[in-house]
Image (cartoon, rainbow, N blue to C red; front, side, top):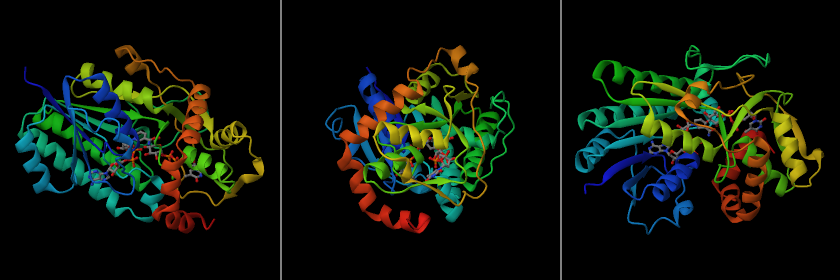
Length: 339
Ligand code: NAD
Ligand code: DAU
């Protein structure tokens, strides 16, 4: 039997990494190719347990290198692409927007061209709720797939641009695409520059936890395993050309999230440090997942069960995040916060 080839870009990062694990283990009948540039956010140690499996392959490559990507697609003739690779951190996009345009916009366009050349069966583009901009604090409003795109940060503008290119390749060339737009993820291997792993790692080291502004901004948190299951469903059942929002109605203010973690770890709230607000800080995100639910998706974690499991994971995997926070990242953090 001819085996199907699935290219996963960004599979050394947080969500792509969890997705690679999930797909390699769930679908032994697929060959999974993890393509990643291994930037500061990519690490392969998370895949030690699947390295030896015969349906897992790693390719070090840059999605923004057209010649390299074209040659790879010509050689391997992938059947499917699930595209996670991106610059993903809003704060970094404020200090260095250019790399976000290169990777997120140009990189996506290069992948679309390469996928078009080999008549791909499906291209799933993993996007974000941030492309919709922000909601106000009226808790009855939600992002639907029909909400206009109004990105506010260089990161979300680059993701929205890539979404529009994906849409255009479907409308113009008939490329079989889906776009998923998920809310904030958390879970194993979340890089400690993002709020939840940053809070856990700082609290465990008894270091100050920077909370932007008054801490009242709201994010809608989803466990990464539930996000992976949503992408699996869209990959197999999504109607070509459609966008699917992903979120589990877990809205929390940032200060609630930080205090929950501090209490789970038995630490003091004195660690909280209210610092200068993020520029253009989006007030609130909240997803209406009705369309995906109609396709058959339901989250399995509440915020309470998910955050408990995640804190446990960081306690059991100290070596992984300690190596990160004591390396180059230390300099970034000091520059960012002066802490
Ligand atoms: P991440 O920063 O943890 O991982 C990104 C990965 O992409 C890294 O492994 C990195 O090495 C790789 N990469 C970066 N530039 C590359 C390039 N030029 N070529 C090849 N690989 C490259 O990101 P994440 O949080 O796992 O997010 C993955 C995707 O999901 C992104 O597209 C992001 O926009 C989207 N998303 C993230 C969230 C979230 O809460 N983290 C929510 C919704 C959507
Ligand atoms: O909504 C999906 C998006 O979620 C993804 O597309 C992005 O890739 C991902 O990084 C995330 O973006 P956010 O900006 O929402 O995540 P972050 O963890 O950076 O911040 C969450 C909230 O916490 C936000 O309101 C800013 C605040 N914050 C963040 C950091 C890093 C703080 O108060 N202090 C901090 O040190």
